[in-house]
Length: 128
Image: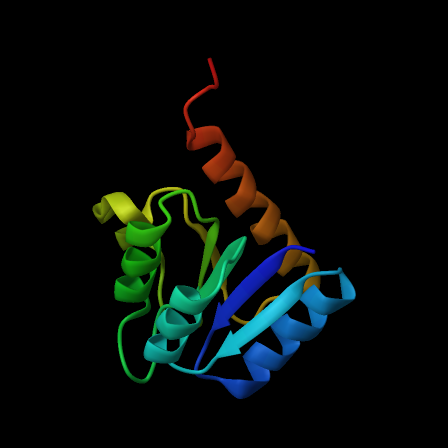
């Protein structure tokens, strides 16, 4: 069962995302702060992460950078209700990050997750 880390300071958003993913047979770990998310990531193995750009304790961009430093091929979805995602290309760790604008529908979430997985798979070197 694929394991997804959700880092979002809005409880209702985390709950909705978790429900959608669990219905589609994902194991979910929720974190309400960047620090809690990084701690959970350090303690376990994840197949993808969904990270809010504006967290109460830190920048979601910093969290994504930290996740990608540890696992460069991690599929990541950045979510935000207040910004465009033009800045995502400014860091090497933010390449191939799928972006999702709040509010979003369950199908949008699943599509973004597939896009994030495909983007990372396409960026990996071909096996020889």
